[in-house]
Image (cartoon, rainbow, N blue to C red; front, top):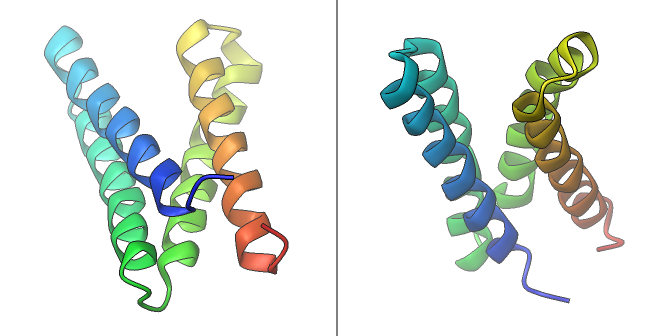
Length: 105
């Protein structure tokens, strides 16, 4: 299994990149604010895990909870590909970092 910080960095890049792309395509300030904020939480969590500092897994798990809380209801309501994809990323993060936090991952 890969190190827990690698998925955090990948999720951080995907969410921040998605927020920036959403802003470029539509001019959506909420997209860039949410994407970069969640991406920064994933990145900071990954950095802290990599350097064996406390609360790295918790930060990545928090980012996953925030992403899931915003994307899953929208995916259910709209059935559009973007919220469904974001929900998938959130569920992956919840599983990966939830297991790491509980000591099983």
